[in-house]
Length: 217
Image (spheres, rainbow, N blue to C red):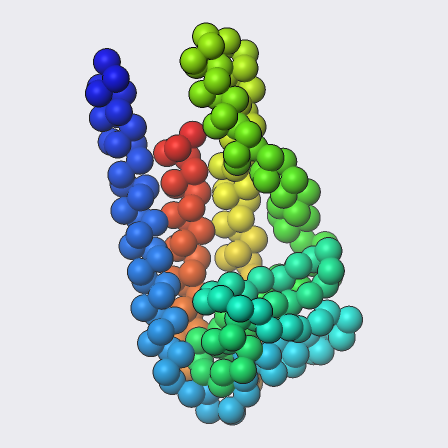
Protein backbone atom coordinates (compact mmCIF):
# COMPACT_ATOMS: atom_id res chain seq x y z
CA UNK A 1 0.00 0.00 0.00
CA UNK A 2 2.80 2.40 0.91
CA UNK A 3 4.67 1.77 -2.33
CA UNK A 4 1.44 2.09 -4.28
CA UNK A 5 0.78 5.52 -2.80
CA UNK A 6 4.41 6.51 -3.32
CA UNK A 7 4.18 5.43 -6.94
CA UNK A 8 1.04 7.52 -7.37
CA UNK A 9 2.85 10.50 -5.83
CA UNK A 10 5.72 10.09 -8.29
CA UNK A 11 3.26 9.74 -11.17
CA UNK A 12 1.61 13.03 -10.22
CA UNK A 13 4.72 14.98 -9.27
CA UNK A 14 7.26 13.88 -11.89
CA UNK A 15 5.73 15.71 -14.90
CA UNK A 16 5.51 18.91 -12.84
CA UNK A 17 9.09 18.47 -11.64
CA UNK A 18 10.35 17.95 -15.18
CA UNK A 19 8.41 21.00 -16.39
CA UNK A 20 9.96 23.06 -13.60
CA UNK A 21 13.46 21.89 -14.48
CA UNK A 22 12.86 22.67 -18.16
CA UNK A 23 11.49 26.13 -17.35
CA UNK A 24 14.46 26.98 -15.10
CA UNK A 25 16.90 25.76 -17.72
CA UNK A 26 15.19 27.78 -20.44
CA UNK A 27 15.11 31.04 -18.49
CA UNK A 28 18.76 30.68 -17.45
CA UNK A 29 19.94 29.91 -20.99
CA UNK A 30 17.89 32.74 -22.48
CA UNK A 31 19.12 35.21 -19.87
CA UNK A 32 22.71 34.06 -20.35
CA UNK A 33 22.47 34.41 -24.14
CA UNK A 34 21.02 37.92 -24.16
CA UNK A 35 23.20 39.08 -21.28
CA UNK A 36 26.08 38.86 -23.74
CA UNK A 37 24.42 41.12 -26.31
CA UNK A 38 24.89 44.81 -25.56
CA UNK A 39 21.92 47.15 -25.82
CA UNK A 40 22.45 49.60 -28.66
CA UNK A 41 21.58 52.68 -26.56
CA UNK A 42 24.12 51.67 -23.91
CA UNK A 43 21.67 52.06 -21.02
CA UNK A 44 22.06 49.81 -17.99
CA UNK A 45 19.18 47.95 -16.39
CA UNK A 46 19.01 50.54 -13.62
CA UNK A 47 18.85 53.37 -16.18
CA UNK A 48 16.15 51.57 -18.16
CA UNK A 49 14.07 51.06 -15.02
CA UNK A 50 14.54 54.68 -13.93
CA UNK A 51 13.49 55.93 -17.37
CA UNK A 52 10.33 53.82 -17.38
CA UNK A 53 9.42 54.84 -13.84
CA UNK A 54 9.93 58.52 -14.63
CA UNK A 55 7.81 58.26 -17.79
CA UNK A 56 5.01 56.95 -15.57
CA UNK A 57 5.51 59.64 -12.90
CA UNK A 58 6.88 57.17 -10.37
CA UNK A 59 9.80 59.23 -9.13
CA UNK A 60 8.96 58.06 -5.60
CA UNK A 61 10.01 54.49 -6.44
CA UNK A 62 13.61 53.80 -5.45
CA UNK A 63 15.97 51.48 -7.34
CA UNK A 64 18.65 49.52 -5.53
CA UNK A 65 21.12 46.76 -6.32
CA UNK A 66 20.82 43.39 -4.57
CA UNK A 67 22.95 40.26 -4.51
CA UNK A 68 22.05 37.04 -6.28
CA UNK A 69 21.21 35.90 -9.79
CA UNK A 70 17.73 36.67 -11.12
CA UNK A 71 16.81 37.93 -7.65
CA UNK A 72 15.10 40.99 -9.13
CA UNK A 73 11.80 42.03 -7.55
CA UNK A 74 9.55 44.95 -6.66
CA UNK A 75 8.38 45.57 -3.10
CA UNK A 76 5.03 47.43 -3.17
CA UNK A 77 5.12 48.06 0.59
CA UNK A 78 8.41 49.98 0.49
CA UNK A 79 8.15 51.09 -3.16
CA UNK A 80 11.61 49.73 -3.86
CA UNK A 81 12.63 48.11 -7.14
CA UNK A 82 15.54 45.73 -6.50
CA UNK A 83 17.76 44.66 -9.38
CA UNK A 84 20.40 41.93 -9.26
CA UNK A 85 24.02 42.70 -10.03
CA UNK A 86 23.79 41.25 -13.54
CA UNK A 87 20.89 43.57 -14.33
CA UNK A 88 21.51 46.75 -12.35
CA UNK A 89 24.78 47.85 -13.94
CA UNK A 90 24.70 45.89 -17.22
CA UNK A 91 23.76 47.38 -20.59
CA UNK A 92 22.41 44.20 -22.18
CA UNK A 93 19.17 43.12 -23.83
CA UNK A 94 18.48 40.72 -20.96
CA UNK A 95 19.02 43.43 -18.35
CA UNK A 96 16.67 45.77 -20.20
CA UNK A 97 13.93 43.12 -20.29
CA UNK A 98 14.19 42.18 -16.63
CA UNK A 99 14.43 45.80 -15.46
CA UNK A 100 11.42 46.79 -17.56
CA UNK A 101 9.45 43.82 -16.20
CA UNK A 102 10.07 44.87 -12.59
CA UNK A 103 9.17 48.45 -13.48
CA UNK A 104 5.95 46.97 -14.87
CA UNK A 105 5.11 45.75 -11.36
CA UNK A 106 5.62 49.26 -10.01
CA UNK A 107 3.22 50.55 -12.67
CA UNK A 108 0.69 47.86 -11.68
CA UNK A 109 0.96 48.99 -8.07
CA UNK A 110 0.44 52.64 -8.94
CA UNK A 111 -2.70 51.71 -10.91
CA UNK A 112 -4.07 49.44 -8.15
CA UNK A 113 -3.98 46.47 -10.51
CA UNK A 114 -6.42 43.99 -8.95
CA UNK A 115 -4.50 40.69 -9.23
CA UNK A 116 -1.35 42.30 -7.79
CA UNK A 117 -3.29 43.71 -4.83
CA UNK A 118 -4.91 40.32 -4.23
CA UNK A 119 -1.55 38.56 -4.38
CA UNK A 120 -0.04 41.02 -1.91
CA UNK A 121 -2.89 40.34 0.52
CA UNK A 122 -2.21 36.61 0.24
CA UNK A 123 1.47 36.81 1.22
CA UNK A 124 0.99 36.34 5.01
CA UNK A 125 -1.33 33.34 4.58
CA UNK A 126 0.99 31.76 2.01
CA UNK A 127 4.04 32.21 4.25
CA UNK A 128 2.13 30.46 7.03
CA UNK A 129 0.41 27.80 4.95
CA UNK A 130 3.47 26.75 2.93
CA UNK A 131 5.19 25.28 6.02
CA UNK A 132 2.39 24.83 8.57
CA UNK A 133 -0.07 23.25 6.14
CA UNK A 134 2.00 20.12 5.37
CA UNK A 135 2.84 19.69 9.08
CA UNK A 136 -0.81 19.81 10.08
CA UNK A 137 -1.77 17.52 7.23
CA UNK A 138 0.79 14.86 8.17
CA UNK A 139 -0.07 15.19 11.87
CA UNK A 140 -3.73 14.71 11.03
CA UNK A 141 -2.94 11.55 9.07
CA UNK A 142 -0.66 10.07 11.73
CA UNK A 143 -3.06 10.87 14.57
CA UNK A 144 -6.14 9.92 12.52
CA UNK A 145 -7.64 13.38 13.05
CA UNK A 146 -9.39 14.07 9.76
CA UNK A 147 -10.31 17.70 10.53
CA UNK A 148 -6.69 18.55 11.33
CA UNK A 149 -5.55 17.04 8.02
CA UNK A 150 -8.25 18.96 6.13
CA UNK A 151 -7.22 22.25 7.75
CA UNK A 152 -3.61 21.54 6.77
CA UNK A 153 -4.71 20.83 3.22
CA UNK A 154 -6.66 24.09 3.06
CA UNK A 155 -3.69 26.05 4.42
CA UNK A 156 -1.37 24.57 1.80
CA UNK A 157 -4.05 25.23 -0.83
CA UNK A 158 -3.31 28.93 -0.39
CA UNK A 159 0.13 28.23 -1.89
CA UNK A 160 -1.47 26.84 -5.03
CA UNK A 161 -3.90 29.77 -5.27
CA UNK A 162 -0.99 32.19 -4.87
CA UNK A 163 0.89 30.45 -7.72
CA UNK A 164 -2.19 30.68 -9.95
CA UNK A 165 -2.73 34.39 -9.23
CA UNK A 166 0.96 35.03 -9.90
CA UNK A 167 0.62 33.97 -13.56
CA UNK A 168 -1.59 36.87 -14.77
CA UNK A 169 0.36 39.32 -12.58
CA UNK A 170 3.68 38.35 -14.17
CA UNK A 171 2.29 38.13 -17.71
CA UNK A 172 0.78 41.59 -17.40
CA UNK A 173 4.05 43.04 -16.09
CA UNK A 174 5.89 41.52 -19.06
CA UNK A 175 3.28 42.86 -21.47
CA UNK A 176 3.69 46.34 -20.04
CA UNK A 177 7.47 46.00 -20.25
CA UNK A 178 7.42 44.97 -23.90
CA UNK A 179 5.01 47.76 -24.86
CA UNK A 180 6.90 50.55 -23.13
CA UNK A 181 10.30 49.38 -24.35
CA UNK A 182 8.96 49.35 -27.90
CA UNK A 183 6.91 52.57 -27.87
CA UNK A 184 9.51 54.62 -25.99
CA UNK A 185 12.31 53.61 -28.35
CA UNK A 186 14.43 52.13 -25.58
CA UNK A 187 15.00 49.00 -27.67
CA UNK A 188 15.39 48.76 -31.41
CA UNK A 189 14.61 46.16 -34.07
CA UNK A 190 15.71 42.66 -33.16
CA UNK A 191 16.47 43.72 -29.59
CA UNK A 192 12.77 43.37 -28.84
CA UNK A 193 12.94 39.72 -29.96
CA UNK A 194 15.60 39.16 -27.31
CA UNK A 195 13.46 40.84 -24.66
CA UNK A 196 10.53 38.64 -25.69
CA UNK A 197 12.68 35.53 -25.41
CA UNK A 198 13.85 36.37 -21.89
CA UNK A 199 10.44 37.39 -20.55
CA UNK A 200 8.56 34.53 -22.22
CA UNK A 201 11.00 32.06 -20.69
CA UNK A 202 10.49 33.67 -17.29
CA UNK A 203 6.71 33.41 -17.70
CA UNK A 204 7.04 29.65 -18.18
CA UNK A 205 8.63 29.34 -14.73
CA UNK A 206 5.47 30.76 -13.13
CA UNK A 207 3.29 28.31 -15.03
CA UNK A 208 5.59 25.51 -13.91
CA UNK A 209 5.35 26.76 -10.32
CA UNK A 210 1.56 26.58 -10.43
CA UNK A 211 1.65 23.06 -11.92
CA UNK A 212 4.09 21.93 -9.21
CA UNK A 213 1.90 23.42 -6.47
CA UNK A 214 -1.14 21.65 -7.93
CA UNK A 215 0.62 18.28 -8.18
CA UNK A 216 1.79 18.59 -4.55
CA UNK A 217 -1.70 19.56 -3.43
